[in-house]
Length: 266
Length: 113
Ligand SMILES: Nc1nc2c(ncn2[C@@H]2O[C@H](COP(=O)(O)OP(=O)(O)OP(=O)(O)O)[C@@H](O)[C@H]2O)c(=O)[nH]1
Ligand SMILES: [Mg+2]
Ligand SMILES: [Zn+2]
Image (tube, rainbow over all chains, first blue to last red; front, side, top):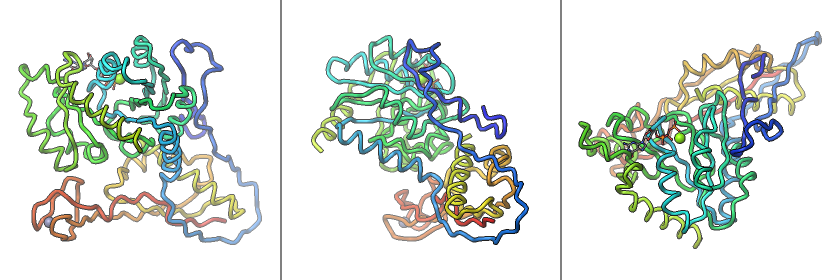
């Protein structure tokens, strides 16, 4: 972490399972770029006004477009999975990869602040995976995806699953160049999640409602959740699933196959 | 707290412009922030000071134009003020709308010396 500004951007690392202790594999992906001026200049200068109107997220957006171009050229379907911590992103990935890996070439990017845990769970299935640790950062950004994809070097016609950092707020603002954004919400959370965190539901294309195996034990109103979500995003499509029992996963797989088809026929 | 990344982005933009202009530091920075931009003003405030310390923005005065969000109803074409992304049309009740203002997150202008 930078002693001057405490911004912590130099904590970010990208690594594959098994590279844990080898420091040279830690790829610095955000260079610390502050100029440290000390104002020893005693001359008087003219003040100049610069009209800019520049979008603060321009840089991330440009890099997202670069990723999108790469995915398009290689006909890779890229999905950005977002949710609160613990809604079941990794569990859904594990089940999906297990069920479909004979049919589809998968690659996974795992985003987390600290550990390699999720990457190790994917690695156990023998699917190529890269972990991006964001340190104090609470979301993935496009340049991290660019570097992680370089490490993965995915083949054509494959599917890239990006598990974002568990957080329903920050990842909403950062386009990664994905084809579709998938928001996951579990029924152990409140029905009002969509209106408490509207940006995430607003920017997502589909919504997986996870842990429906627990419906008999909870007082959860599925229709209420959907109603709230549709107010935020009238185009949202829902899939009710259980990563634990596999219930409802077929419809999500059908959607996935359909999207792969669309991408390959572009 | 993505506001920290936002401030880092703002610093980068300021550094770039300063370099282009061949100047030393920024005395004033004007930001445009929409009410639906995803940036919390309080969180931005909190992130600002430690982040700009030692940078070209350290001594810059910061002005923020806060922009209230507006939408146009897709069904009846009414234009209305929105507070939340999920607000519906006050005329016909539809949730289908285009947000026309309020997503801004821009560096509007800089004064450099
Ligand atoms: N009953 C039930 N539990 C589930 C289901 N899916 C996930 N879980 C449990 O929920 C917990 C969190 O699951 P993860 O898959 O690690 O969640 P995550 O979204 O990847 O979490 P983070 O990466 O920490 O944000 C684990 O204990 C899972 O076993 C489900 O469909 N039903
Ligand atoms: Mg996970
Ligand atoms: Zn209307």
